[in-house]
Image (cartoon, rainbow, N blue to C red; front, top):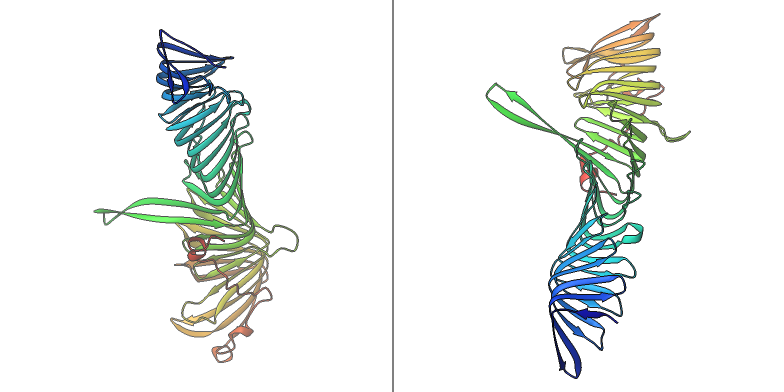
Length: 435
């Protein structure tokens, strides 16, 4: 039974039930639970009490505060709908209403829930807090912020001591420094290992906004958004600051797109590698403007977020579709190739090893046949992303086919590696359809 004492005590019977009202310096005691308040109404048969004014409940290192609440002796539980504050020296938990079970060391808080510890802030509509095991289960409009990342979800399980979170339903995680947001349906984050995985419908978005002066009189805003979609995404926030997109990867940024099975982004080094996931997997494909590129492995080196060098290792093949004559494809294959960019404009390509090429000639804008060549090395210079100059080195050979033998027969002028991939990712695939 609970014991209630105070300055003044009044006894009465209400509806056949014995009731005591205690006023002034009220103290309720049950085992190691002590509650103080200004006024209390004790229901003797029910072993319950209503607590009014400056209510403070203490159990060991736990303190609960509210302006008005109830204490249920048989359940060893307190409840309030007048705003609650819980402080157990590990977390501070506040809400519009809440319950606490002293024997179970369990709290259930509702409406405008806010949990704060030394490193994180968690907001939700409802939260169950298991004090002994430092576990929280949050439901409804959940947000958890650790200063570096902000996770949002419909539900979230958070283990404070292990810094481990599991989120489900309308999940997003935003990296504050890089302005990267990843969406999905299920997320697990290990704060100690600094590892995150999203393995249900992951979609990454990074919005890059830059300002530039135009005519020295006004400022324009250019917004360039990076989209990445895959079956699994992983992030490792260690010295390498590593990000991986795994299986059925689609990438889109402006005029650049890619399909591959494994993308690894070394964010600290500004390096992206697209590769095969396993032996026998399809090779990565990239598109830039009207050009298509394939190879065993493709590495992109960035400079301040812009493409600087693109390096293709193994079985490299590039084709460029003519903008006016859609059936004409300039083609080059080699063992490897490096592309050099300036301000997102392709400037030069260096092809190395067993170079083969097919390039269509034009007299101004009039077709003028095709040239097939071989060499050990080739350098191609570009003007406005179009082939401008081709230079061949190391035992070069070439043969010219006049226009009369080319027109209508363009598809007979293809290299062995020629494959026209027509599944280039489109923006609507990322925005309209998450699956």
